Image (cartoon, rainbow, N blue to C red; front, top):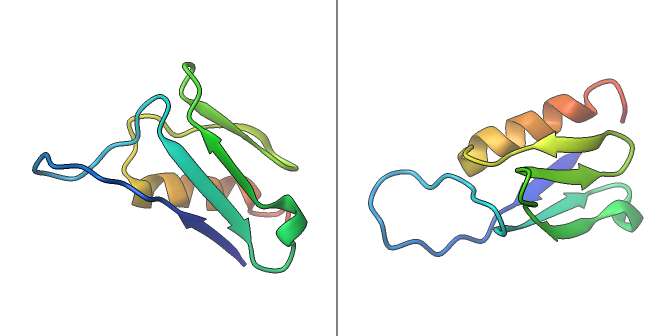
Length: 76
């Protein structure tokens, strides 16, 4: 099981889209040693254990979670 947590404070209306330097936290329920918290890099990606770089910039938190889950499909 993989959980992605996003802590976002935004006063604008509409759905938030992840931006460069936003902090994201990825937690692995069964493998906490691989939990990670990192900022979205200028290239719009984060680097995750086992799968490498995943582009999440300009995605909503829900879409970023789905992209991360898809990256791990078949790996975990």
